[in-house]
Image (cartoon, rainbow, N blue to C red; front, side, top):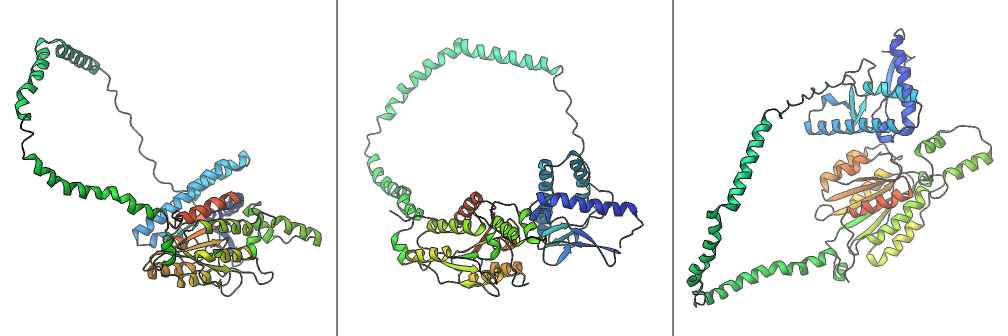
Length: 457
């Protein structure tokens, strides 16, 4: 309940909202998500806490799985570290810097309730005095060792020096080389036994060993083809991996890569009255090239050329509700048709949407993922806006039923809305928010699939 008579708590609530307004433009959406947003509800009698994360919230303290709990606690600490790092580089006044710094202990307070939504931590600020972890015990410097011991060390050094001089100049030691020189003469008769015929049969015994040890030398001839794909493997590729590329073709992919996510959010939420000319100019500015779609198509086409020739590729496009559109698998000889299809992608004008749940579900049904390694590559800038079905639960089901199906995600907007899909299937998330990042991250996403072998010459 919100006690309006408690002026201190109401002041802290106002300060916290100011803190969120300062931090949000400078943090990634993923990092900002750990800070729950307070709102006064029920005629301002209560404080409600909100988050953009979707799913069932549970208290971190109620999670019994210690491994899961430790992982979430690490995620929480990483996000707090990210906030502290960003604060140091924010272009703000010294007063604002001091204000944020004064709130950091309250964010890190052990007294704050921590909720978890799909393994993502969320901090509920209790506006109480911060409870911080105990400071580590002071490091007590060791007592100086160099006291009277230096006399003992000096004596030991002198003894060592005398020993060395004795070894070098002692007459007894000088006679030892002469004795050693004489030793070969004593052993000479033993060497005369070498021509004995007993040695000859041993050569035949050694020959099988030499043949067996020649096996490693033949390994390069076996390993070499594995670093490339022979043309014979393209013809008979029943056991070769397959890949489905899921491509976001929604209207949001038309946003330019030359504006920040904060500027795009402002554009989406603006309700300022503009003349038709001003509105048209604003839209052109926010969708100018290079945009998300043009850059993603360009890099996707280049990535297809890097995928090994015995891997068939299918395309799933996310264009409109309720379901995604699929294509058959394209063989190596027909990849030009696949590339032409990607090149012609263009968002629908009135019914554009992102049926991502449907796309991933259909792509998984097109692949084996049990008897062979199969792959899905998702290129998207957001989350599903066609259904409320839990995409993280779908990913868990896929991971159980198709354990050899890996899903990698290239996140064009850095929103981290569907990270769970990659995390649950053993894949990775690659964030790309500029043309250069899209090239680098797409290459990384394909390389991690281990399906980039060239044709054998």
